[in-house]
Length: 225
Image 1 (cartoon, one colour):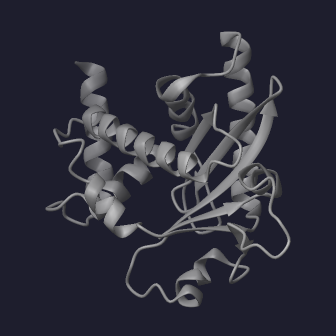
Image 2: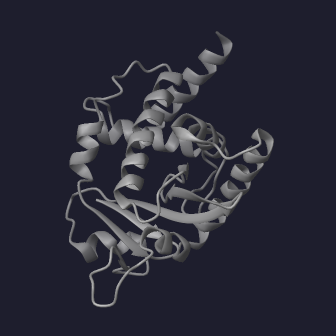
């Protein structure tokens, strides 16, 4: 299941004309803590991926910022249509898969880019939108909003399309992060790639430390080549 924890700004963008008495897409969260959702929603052993999603306006245009809560992997979106939840979900999944394929290649791993998509969709065929904040991740999203604004100022406009937005994602995801549950700083790009490999690629050993070391060595080798 994919759970999108929406700020009020994003909820209003996603569902601008919710009518009284009509079932809404964005609903109250089942629990105050995202970690408790699996039990509250009775998802069993099915994996749950939690995202925080916020909307800011830059150059008078809506820009959507999304961050996966555990890895702090961030993505920015421009040009999304108001009220188009399916468009947002499809854009996130498509770009996430492409960015993971690129990251694996950068780390020296020759993996088929399409192989994990079917498994990802099987794990996350259901999705929910909840109106819920996350103070720690929200602080990180504010920093990413600043990075997006800075990149836009340098380029003379907002990034347009997947490739341009992915370039901003790359800046955000090589920024060291720390959370209340992490002992040391980590790189969101590396954490998400490890999760992606372990969860969605058959035959990858679930050894996080070994994979992080392999990713770091692969990047160093490419820089020295």
